[in-house]
Image 1 (tube, helix red, strand yellow):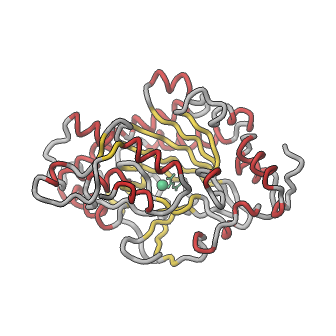
Image 2: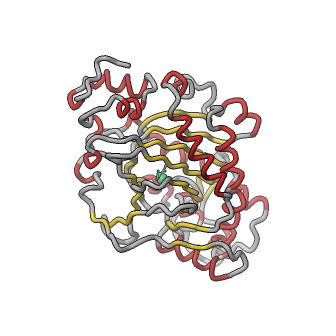
Image 3: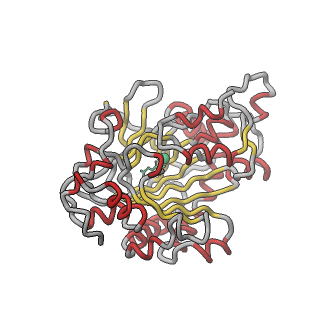
Length: 362
Ligand code: OGA
Ligand code: NI
């Protein structure tokens, strides 16, 4: 452990802190494990980015949709309405076995409990593949203030590749979550695209909407002065859809559409999954479905984990408003662009709310 990081680290030397957290693989968990008393200044967010200062509506919640009756057209309607009006909803009776969810949560704790030297083997500098990435914050080199989060990001290419490179502490459980969510993803996209005049999710459409997967294991350790920082800053996801598993701690906030800086909390519901529209679906639906800003508050007394599964187009896909929409004379507001260019643009900068999608506007 780096002796230069004092437990009262407001004034820690910046190079030492970045080296300890980012380069030596200790992450913010390493700081939390030291029993840090004060938040290091590198994590202090400007006032406008802090959740403590924003307007949260306590009585309002995103829709909760029961998926148990797969033939009920009202269910499909509720999914589409939620994707238009909220961009976010929770699903219960979704068909992903509860054991699969419990196991991937345990695996997340197991991975982050590994010593820094083990986790560091999967960092950008040390991982033998770009498809596995252990890291901290979002884009530390591009950020004015850091985010209080460590993560492991796993991009699925093939079973063979995953078997070779995904960390053994969580490999099987992450794969099971990914596989177990396949039918759910397909069902949601089926409902959503029907409203866009897509008659049938044929193989090509399926590949375009859900041809690649990324699963992240997020770890938000106990934070001194959580009100001064964020777990994740304001952003929208670049996915088609995100299927997010959160534990029972809470802290995810979603912006209310068409209201200035007004947010709602996403309360943990045991066994549920949180679904959100990503930028790729906003683009393909020509703005009908909304990828909405969200952020995570740091927690002063509990370690929180979450496991988002990003259901994406393939990097080599060209995405744009679907032809089924444009053929009726609708004017496209987004251009056709290579999905990998869009994703690269997202990862080049710090989290900045809904800015990324400007890149796709005509
Ligand atoms: C994300 C995200 C929310 C959470 O990883 O993109 O928004 O609750 N996570 O961790
Ligand atoms: Ni997100």
